[in-house]
Image (cartoon, rainbow, N blue to C red; front, side, top):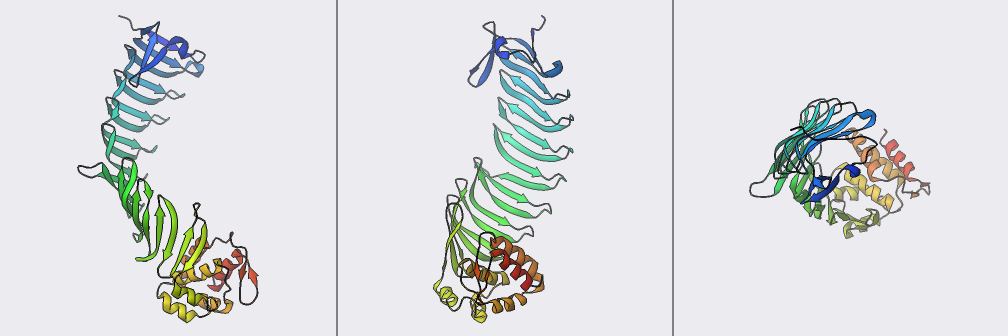
Length: 354
């Protein structure tokens, strides 16, 4: 028996040819008030074939192919009773494979593989009834980028991420497509950077921030919004509004008493309280600057000259990030001069002889 073929061209309206209704999420094609059985071909500009597939009893069936304007296949999929069933493929415009996987009863199942245009593997995932059970992402050179490892008898997956050198930069947990539970962030050299927890996909509670292996600050979040950040070594707390703008700084009593003694004039007292890395001491200067306190110019210059050569570039970069020079309009020195935030940044730079 000859198959009934319906061809639809660019100027045609498919609604004039088919009535398409949904039944339990499945498209049903009607023609002449009856479920259609036959082959459908859709043509675009210059009568180039864009889509072809079979329909049985009104439902998509067997192989369906969609084409790029250049004639290369874009997608190849298989149907059974209107649901995707069997091999599923997506291609790049040059005909090379982008994605390969399988459907069973309309849901992803088994191994799915994605590729970069150059042909190397981008991702591979295992599915069961539409739910990913584990996955691996790769950089273009084939090195592992991230992985999701299923936990036995649980919907939770452990997540690991790596940089291009193969060093782990993140570990955490994923459940029902959102971040949950504890997480750890590492710097590119593998050094610990942050530790905390997710709750319902948002950072929540206390987050520990590390510098050179030690706690540098503790941030407090509520449903993903930063509330405050405490610097235990510097002995002050920063408070933020809903847009993460700094709204106030509160010092511990010991530090507040020290700062009242002419700002940072007495360097030796700061050294005794800080007992830590150079950048922590620099933070004290920056906080005084932000609070518009007067600072001793000559003592500051003396301090900057003592910063080790090996730390100068790193500290200057952190100062630029930490001190938003565009927000600060006036800085007061004990000499009576008033500088802009940019002037202060240049002062720090020149003071370190960079």
